[in-house]
Image 1 (cartoon, rainbow, N blue to C red):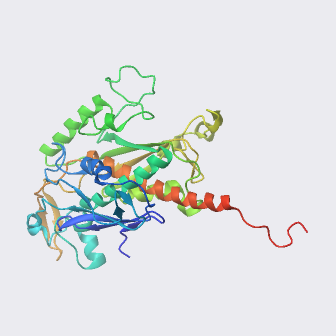
Image 2: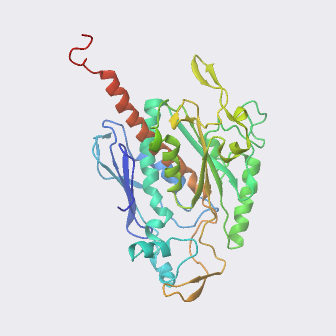
Image 3: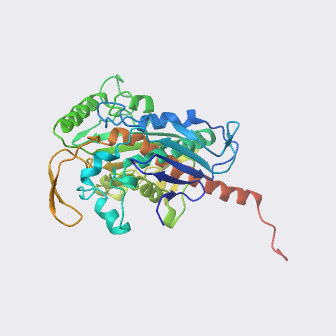
Length: 387
């Protein structure tokens, strides 16, 4: 009932509140004998953690992961894996003056309406602190996909406010110039700037825009784009569990998300069918498509082309500008937020998008393995077959 469980075969259940003792996740369904240790998980948590640059919240959390179950001698047992991260810099008292005030565009009011009780210290489960567990579990899912299928997942900041990164194909000139090739971009290129935009010219503009929002006591949003290379064919189930539908659910479950599109997305509505269709061709000895406006999914099932999609994030709801609101009794109040908040969530949201992508893909990969293994084993002929 709590809505904290995700997946069907590879499942995760995140737990913990923003200013409680810690946060984490239980991973169930992970295959046994997978080599795994904190070193496989920590790099992605380091990319997500607060206080990593001047563009993020100054909250200081080391986010060191502890693996409390599911491992023996460096390999998974096939049993539930419990991952935990301590909250080291929690300051619940900083929210005391807000305990009876509904913050604009937060979950305060809706949690009260649903449960009749809420953790007013930093938003509780509605806080982005909850995503620590997702990123930790996503790192495990990503290792499985990388070892089994050589799958690569790379996300980056495509736009912030009205500033958009430029793209070019692999034949583009000086890599130090503006623009980048989405088909070949690496995480190292993405992480080369604190804003996690692989276009260096756009990145500098984005940094200045975020810093201006911080000085003004305001915030800005934007779009994260992602690509998945070496995607196994056949992932996704017809009708309700189409791969793009599960990706959309995964992305829109992240805090501050407001939109999802795959392939051509909304821009495809401005094309005709003859312009939009992806013709089939033979590439490197296999059937593929000449273009990829489908974004790697057709009929809800992966076709082997790269997955390409985008996720829209709203401006951070907590800002320092005075805002009119009401308290729990409906009395008018003016809220001036204090505390430690991101003026733009996008740089830290990049590993979140990658994690949820890995979780969706590994779950569908395991479902597909079950189908293909059942088919491989075959079935006995029915009685009197061929009589």
